[in-house]
Length: 473
Image (tube, rainbow, N blue to C red):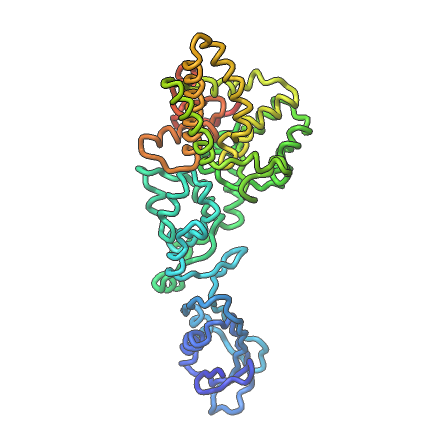
């Protein structure tokens, strides 16, 4: 039973004497019944001049979605205090009182206690904050260019300083846009709430999402690199809307098996190369569907499969041969990046897509980055014969060279994976930045993965200075 100034409620409607103290009783009412969503004030006839004008309050009680504590908003007091109640009036005014949620343009988000935010600090559920904003970055852990461990290190904590840290990595506006997409609520403290409700500019105290006009302006901004449609490394991890992307570019639908779309697409080589080098990012699952049948598992390879599968036979072969070393960096450069010589037919285009194109199309897909052992066995088998043909005079030396080549590719593949998905030591960060720029800035240069050496040899070194104009093909 509700009571205000000594009057008891009858159902959802109760009466109370209007007095100078009534406006200040609203906080008490709201604190006692935190799930009141809206208060409606109705005017009624006064039975006597001496009893004072009476009125009633109709309330709507909503059950709690969660047991979050609520706070009293001082604006409710002033709104009611300034309203005029007239006899015989149906609805004089209404006062919106926040419950356990904060209403923002186009969506309603909960206020989340600090203790709960801090508890979300693991791979299953990871929150970070910037001021009062709370972001659920769980789905981004595996996609973070610096590695998921770095995100988990700040799980349940404020990331404002680390995002702006020049020593670690100064994040671009695109990083903040990704965060905005993960906004799940607010963590207001009492000082923040009190300050926001008393201020004429609450948005400067409690950050608000951009307006529709502001978001439209952001979306309309042209990318820095027109050939890839991107501006920064963070853009590589921004989710692609499969439907919009397909309608816009008429290339591949990320929601359907990609292999058959490439094979039956009838794409011209120039169009294919233009589109496959415009990175997309899929978040509908672990990876975008490639075959959509029993072959699908064979196309996904966790990074640890590579050393587990290849290092034992490599170690055995080297122990038999007793010596040998090899490297495949030049072969990798030539095999994957001589796009100019790619034949203009669907067999060649599909082979290119399976061998390397899919990595440029989905560069942050962690299961389609290292080469599946089944495919590598097919590609590596001819090199066994090649090694023993060239080094025909010594079987052991040829075996050592072949094993060294396999080991070199294992090192290359793991380095490539870590550049995309791990936070690396300081001396490796420049290489990481260099390689990611190859994906988002200029795919026609910067082919080196483990080093820039071969880019220097072939004159394809990537210019890492900030561009002054848009880069185009």
